[in-house]
Image (cartoon, rainbow, N blue to C red):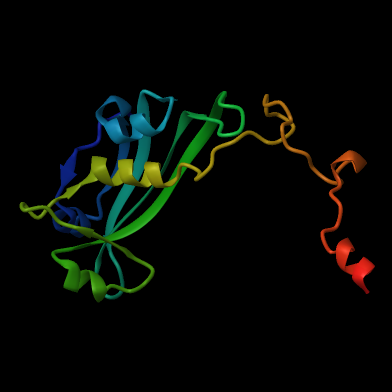
Length: 170
């Protein structure tokens, strides 16, 4: 497979008629939002995108890919190596009303003023969405000192019951 740089924008209607399959990469240096969310990211993001027409006559854009990235562990603030996978299925729409009419198994993506879809932004959005909400190592692998106690509290930390005063009144 050749390493081809993917186009930034593409016409989904022409591509779907030809049943186009694009396999290639985007430069991560062009994805500023992704770079801001990660400590570092692989230089090239490999993606496979396929265009087609489904049984309802809707244009579809489906794709898969993944990228190795370094995130910040929220427990110990050390680096956390992770793979950000993406798997998406979109259908292009011209406006919000058309998006409301799509079947629930398709996500809507709006066309730009030229009737094209920005593939790079689509892939960047999906990669950002694949970042875990709270990235962290497994508890055993985390370098953080155990500042939280798991399980039973020691005897010295037990507090007296505030309702013991009521027992005396009874």
